[in-house]
Image (cartoon, rainbow, N blue to C red):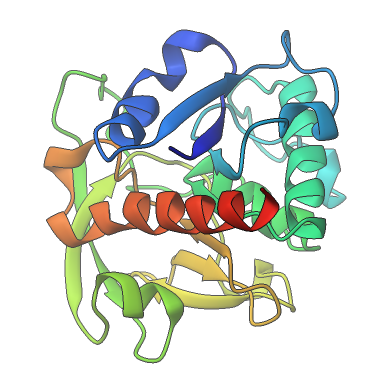
Length: 232
């Protein structure tokens, strides 16, 4: 049974992500800045990485000062996840980034972020309420498209106020989905590292996305199991 490192600021934040992994036959190893020792230590008995949603990234990581009164940042978590991502790629461990996780992938590869995007999240949204929905187009020929289906427009949840467009995209990454309404990039992948996918929506909120998006968890678990078998 593959074990997936799940990053979060605190254990409670990780609950919906671990539930999606465990319901599909995987195990979850929750890692927080408080429990983090080193990237190498984190992947002992683990063979996958899930970068979860959460706090805004520290703007200095992409060479900017705060342009607005951004939400609270947590630099210790930024540093932890950047170290984990770097190690995972060096060891060819599969990585799935969700919301903040996708944004962190973009920054790690040299991209930037839009520090505030209007109309992408209801300011009154809470975890137990239904969020705004928006359209996402998945590009044909992308790895994401091979997993969930390409050339289609999906309706997904919208729980972010930061993100990126083409001008902020890391040059070495490809946009595999975008919002046809405003051009916000909704998914990223790497042509050089096939085991890396980031999505802007929150598929762990399983009732708020098309069922095909839940295949992302199967993708992560299956590749983690493949990696685990190869390392035995």
